[in-house]
Picture 1 (cartoon, rainbow, N blue to C red):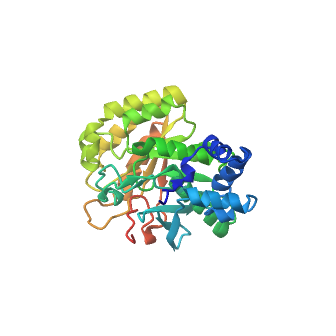
Picture 2 (tube, one colour):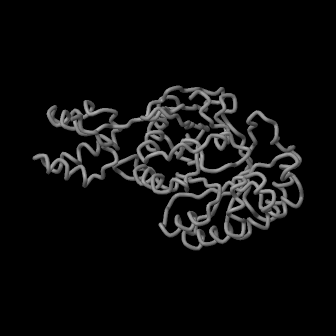
Picture 3 (spheres, helix red, strand yellow):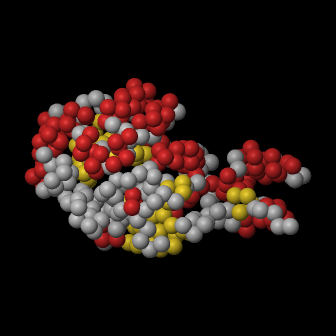
Length: 347
């Protein structure tokens, strides 16, 4: 009878060490294999050149490495790269390399599809098929780091969890992936260079604070008026702004880390004085900065980019109140790699 092979990257280092001891080998062999799996990004057991052939064969008989495969890579005119990432079970997610003159950022996915229902986002139109495992998240980062070195002659500098899915609805796996990314046994990246973006799940924001995370927090806000926000993001009816505010105050009191609000201004929806005033008021609850994001249409025309004049009204009001604000121009629009456009059309 054929034994079902386990995903070896689901094992901790201690479990790997125990496996080797129970099979008559030395515990340190587990350390070697662990380094190959995470630090060196081995795709198969044959890559593990300092491990005896008989040991590699034993690993092959007992385990699999469920490695991702970049099925399709598209390059934008502005240097942005979008990867269609094939998972071991055939499902596809997308991740993006976003370059500027000084940094390269990986935008990674945390779910196949999304748990939420934001009306302006292409990913939300896909039902959530499953959560990504920690190694599948980690592999996206490794692939983009390799592309950054290849195309821009420098390692990856930043990571944003702003791809497909709601990261806080896959909390444990996202946290495990980040642990690997910041570990010296993984990529050794500073947590300050990682931003987790949430649509605003108050209970999970408080959990982040309780877990004393060191990475940055961004919130897709888009309106500080409940009626408008629930029109844009229907799920937010379950998470009113009063609850979100309380969770963010809790976050700041525990972490002393300011929040970034991601905010798109749409024509006829939130391009009015009441919306501007409400955002300014909301920004005073905890130290924050605001990213005003250029909207990227997803074909049906229900949501349209607001005028420059409307965006300037936001900028003037925020600056008048000493709130840091930046306008984020989207990159990779010509390959559907910009914010809100990820929907694995090639799957």
